[in-house]
Amino acid sequence: LAPMENAIVSPSVRLAEWAEQRVGLFVDTQNLYYAARENYGQHVDYEQLMAVVARGRRLVQASAYVVEREGESTAFGFITKLSTLGYRVKRRKVRIHRSDNGGRPVLEGDWDMGIAADMVRAWDRLDVVVLASGDGDFAPIVQLAQERGCRVEVMAFRESAGQSLIDLADVFVNLPELPRIFVRHPLVADGEPETRPSL
Image (cartoon, rainbow, N blue to C red; front, side, top):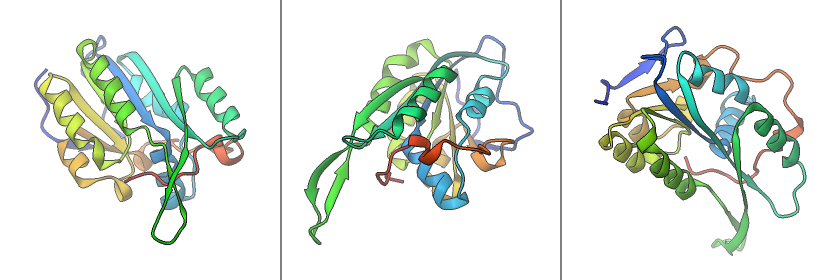
């Protein structure tokens, strides 16, 4: 597929091009959690996110990547909910890797490399790669996916999304502009990660 002209879509624009368009969704829950909380004081509705991505198209894969603290139990409800919605959930424990200059522990455990690797494994069977993250570190893998013939759609929060990611995407969707993208009654703490993502 030839990449579309870079565009930022409004909620009224349908992402679908044809009914048999094969779509893969890759969700960086850590990035979305902090962006939604810090910019809007809200939580993302992952059911609605999937529905928007799949509407009028064939959703081949939906993967959600979760980071957990050692011994943390609050993530269980969140992971169960994602699984129930049809996401393939991948989990990773955060590690206290070292201390910074102030002697404070630095938590590490993001999914950047894992998400990129899964995109590489999947792109030969996809027409569209949908990346739900604003992490600018994904810019190189987005470009590679496009070179492989995939259209890449990025769904994130404009306020915290890397400009390089916005510029590269065939389509950038600013999540707050989508209807019902925030949940009304989230799970307590959403069970989502507490580590600070790289934006």
